[in-house]
Amino acid sequence: TGDALRAFHSALRSSPVNTKNQAMKDQAQGTMLKVLTSFKSSEIEQAVNSLDRNGIDLLMKYIYKGFEKPTENSSAILLQWHEKVRVWCSLGSAMLCRDPCQCF
Image (tube, rainbow, N blue to C red; front, side):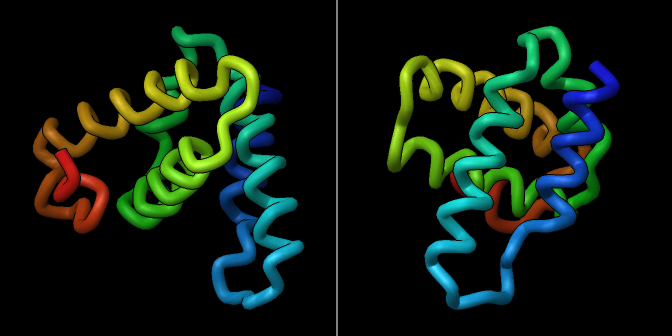
């Protein structure tokens, strides 16, 4: 659990959000997809709850990008992440959560 959570936070911190380099973005997306799919279902909620609003926004972007280019079994896992983000947004945090919560 600790290794996956550290990898999760590291991948989010190193996200190339301000670059126009598509290769870097693709590599980051691939890394994040590997990290997200490494979590057990029972660990996802803890990871989501460890984020602030900006982290949730970024995570949701990665989830939607993952849906665009699914790999084997990734869609099922991404749906679990999506559900936990939706719950996070509905539990009193909706006023902090701009775009992700608007899609529910």
